[in-house]
Length: 420
Image (cartoon, rainbow, N blue to C red):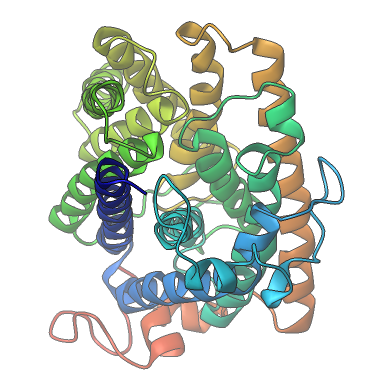
């Protein structure tokens, strides 16, 4: 390579790694958001889930996930096969980690960027099943999710599989990451059931507020910041004028969509409840971010704001609707990442001239059906073998004690649990 090519290679590799670090930092955002949105007696367990799922995702994606998602020789457009896993070809994760990469950026940087994405998808699951799931049941599911379920549908789009051939567009993962993670969470919640006391016998809903709204707000800001890496890094390179301008537009549109989501969710909550609900504002920000993730490059900043705002409205009505049908999601993850993820995929047709509604709906349906069926089977097997839900007594005392043997706030939460 000549000096200019080497400089571009170094710059793009560095950019890829730094944006990957920003996405990794989203793990802290999910941890803080979820820790704030659950009750104090369940905080240590939710934090344990978040750090352990990241480790599981990293290992499983290295061992098999990366090679399933990006196979050297796929069986066909819908089945990548298992011939590339565990170092059997030069395109496996293990080999890529040892290689020098290609002429654009290091292969190692690509693996790192991809592995933090799969961890993000798994993080979505942890909040939805909070406060009543067994820790190790969750981690066993994480093994299958990050090693097989996520990489399979990722191959269909980003690995050059069937959805990519059909013209399905998903720039940074409204479907591949967010809808996939939310659907896996939805499957888990269906088999797990609601928290005790959430829904009364007369059909009314008992709100269960989170313990720490400052922490939840901090987590949202961290996620907002990390999303610049999520969407910006997905441009892949930054070493020429055109790509640098594209990255700048992606950053601006990502920010504007989040802003639109906040304002729209706040206004919607105010109109519906007569109050400005902070939790809806936080979920509105995340909804705006999810909505723009499928296509942050083509919209104008004004259109990006509108796309995010529509996501902010959708998420409020989705959270209310899921509660009415007794789908208990303590952090609103299914609504934020799943329902709004669907909107994000559809919204691509508003700005990208290459997008078609048929292709977008086909991709949406394929990701949803695959993830739902595969997750239901996986959750079902885990439920039969070891069970997925803690006992009623353990749930009342708090899963911090039963699963982790310690409390996050020992000075404020008695070891007998208060139910709060």
